[in-house]
Image (tube, rainbow, N blue to C red; front, top):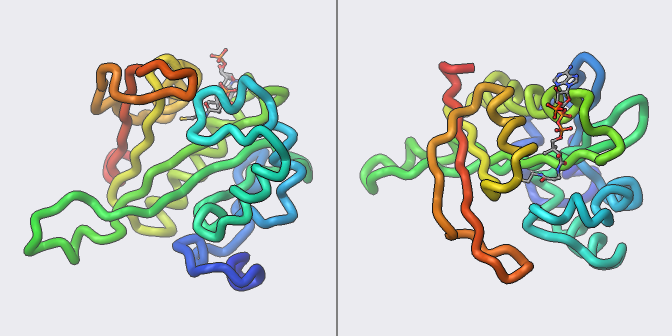
Length: 196
Ligand SMILES: CC(C)(COP(=O)(O)OP(=O)(O)OC[C@H]1O[C@@H](n2cnc3c(N)ncnc32)[C@H](O)[C@@H]1OP(=O)(O)O)[C@@H](O)C(=O)NCCC(=O)NCCS
């Protein structure tokens, strides 16, 4: 049964996929409320939240964010030997289009995101998980383009994108406000289905 039905949540593009999805060493599946404690193990670490949109200060804040149906509907967990070691985001979106053809631009691309437990860094697990995620986007969901963005100073994140062959398409200057109060540069990457 698709996870969203199981948990009474809104429908999601993830419903179209047969779960779990296996890669060489990992298993990917939709996140559920039962993943709260496991994801908190890395979400609570300072180094992890530093570059992420949200850095919940307490387990209760993390719970409130994870239990938001819209958030769950676009979150996958990365499992290694039965242990949740990371999270992925898959947000299907419309492409920009002119008004007359907007229908053909609906839900044709996805924004991706990732977090890995720092104890598991350096083994290529994030690369492998995101490779599996991009496969899902192009092969299973039939999307035409994937995108991702990060702070320019988040070198490990954009190096991951470059390992996977994603192309840097934008460098934006002091456009992104960090919770420290500083405006940082940002980078945007993308990949087309025919390039995969
Ligand atoms: C971004 C993030 C997921 C990258 O993690 P990572 O450990 O660098 O990525 P991987 O798991 O793919 O590992 C890659 C490293 O393992 C090495 N490696 C070992 N075996 C490998 C394999 N089979 N395949 C690929 N790389 C391998 C690579 O050489 C690389 O090492 P290096 O960094 O010394 O060059 C991680 O830093 C993170 O979670 N950061 C915090 C959250 C965050 O910023 N998210 C992005 C917000 S936009």
